[in-house]
Length: 450
Image (spheres, rainbow, N blue to C red):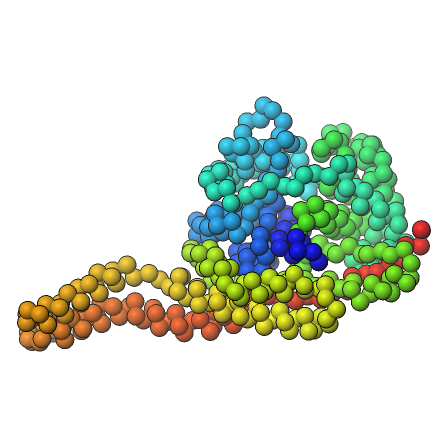
């Protein structure tokens, strides 16, 4: 795993085609976790726009406030479509209104799972708020990496389907459900760009949704899959190929665990190379656990993350992650190293969280000044204070009254401070359990066709 790959991650599982609604409660906590593991957490704007479960979540004011904080701090970034892709004459200017312009482009030229897509009024309001956020905070977004020439998605999908015997797809735990008819047909779509449109026309689709350059892309794959057997198997392969080629272009990791996305099988020319690679062909992935949903998410969390990421503990875990999965160590030993560093980082996060996210007591400073001045007056001028207690008056020296008044008025801030100290161990343990290492063997095959 190279440095560039380990430093950023694309949240590929936000794609509406593979997203599980069960992931929704841990969506914002997941952003916090990945911000502690990667330098950049990247979200494709298309995935954000078309995933109605996520747009519904962000329509809540508190959720949007946290999300906007993470974007504004540059911890999470939206990947924007390059300006050169937008045709002239559109309603929304992609410079001034980048999110609304992307929504318009998707509505006109693209699809949602092979079907026309139109934003709701609530989503349009959300997009306008995101427009203001992105244009006002340059750190919140960046453009996609330049598109590769041709159609690498169709090339990769076709290569796997054309050589499915050497990839041993028939014995693959997921892709093994793919039948020959569907595989042969999709292979033709990939190798002959006009074939998929002819296929849809023969099945009564006279106005298919056409992507860039009339090529065979995901929208076309979804439309064609409706008329073929083993639809789910081919679409899982389609989405997995698309995610793999996208992450490769962005030189980033992808989010696979817990979604419909599957790591693509590897293929080697000879048995010797396959044997040599067997020890290395182990996918090591950091994935949030169910405990992530218990992480408290509230305004101010971006400041907690920024301070935590400035620590030596963050630098240490970045070094470990750079080497994770690429060293000769056993997976068990690699996990042990990660666990220790992750616990240390969680301790720093817990301390910062308790300090920053503890409910504020704005009046505390005034009360402290009151108590100090009363104490000074008592000591220097010999003045007395007349505190009223339970219906009777009781003269006391001013310093005693000042202390009593201070404790009474500062009781809540002091209590919050004690509560913060108590919360630190619990939060540290909760954060520590929120990430798991998944070590899975990637299917290895021999390229017998060469």
